Image (cartoon, rainbow, N blue to C red; front, top):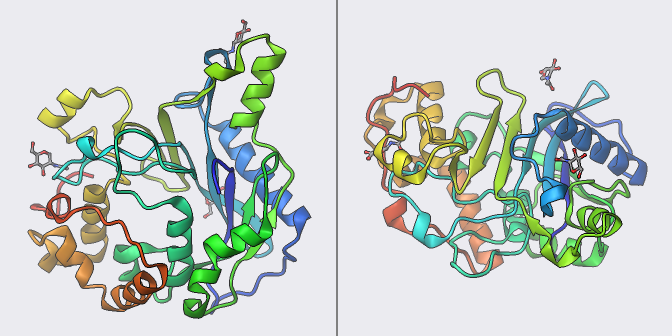
Length: 313
Ligand SMILES: *[C@@H]1O[C@H](CO)[C@@H](O)[C@H](O)[C@H]1NC(C)=O
Ligand SMILES: *[C@@H]1O[C@H](CO)[C@@H](O)[C@H](O)[C@H]1NC(C)=O
Ligand SMILES: *[C@@H]1O[C@H](CO)[C@@H](O)[C@H](O)[C@H]1NC(C)=O
């Protein structure tokens, strides 16, 4: 599976609600349209410019509440960070591809997107830290793939579900295909370039990633090479206080400590804090066995700690 627009839909809390939707193509189209509409409403910073032959990938998560669908999170981007740009402070984002094959050249520690989705389908989409703050794992009711690209139900089933099917507790997510096409995606941009008489071989992904979620505090951030757009790496290394993204490991750890008020996590290395999520870790261990290969960010990049729980986010 490469370079597809993956629209990941419907966050559900199985114990709390039952969906009234039927998961068919019309539903996948509705989800795709909502996510693209949300993307269109965002400012143009970080978006690809077709005049510069740029394209990107888009993914989003929708929530169904009282029969109403809304976009709760959205991200664009195609890149994993190369090994040489990793930081020991947890203050750069390693992985900002909405979906995609691995980058060429500089190797990366990032797992492929389909491995990650398979993992989340098995262990819960909330991730290790958040698992300590929610009462039950979070699973997707459906996963929709956007239109205009090759789609194989069997390949998707194998990549996202089959390998971990014995670990999946709730009904597995429905895998759906939409025919709504993302206009800033690779194929659309190539088509537009052709129309404008530009050489389509110059098409390339835009360097920036847009990260948006429906939150009150800083809902929108634009990332370039793992740090906030507009800050040079040199300046970031000298003073990372404002250039570190909220979705970086460091800031996620800080948010976890501030929300949970768990003072015992102050000065505790990130890896140790994660071990406190014993149930999640147990599910992860089973999942690792099922998936076999498992790329992990090396220890040295996961030893940072929060020193002051009241540090400004
Ligand atoms: C692309 O270029 C055309 C003219 O060449 C211009 O009208 C249009 O605004 C440009 N689009 C963007 C997104 O810069
Ligand atoms: C910022 O970098 C310093 C070292 O220059 C490091 O001690 C600190 O943990 C980093 N903070 C964040 C938020 O990454
Ligand atoms: C964010 O979610 C709230 C409900 O939780 C909703 O009322 C609001 O319209 C949403 N905002 C956006 C921009 O999606």
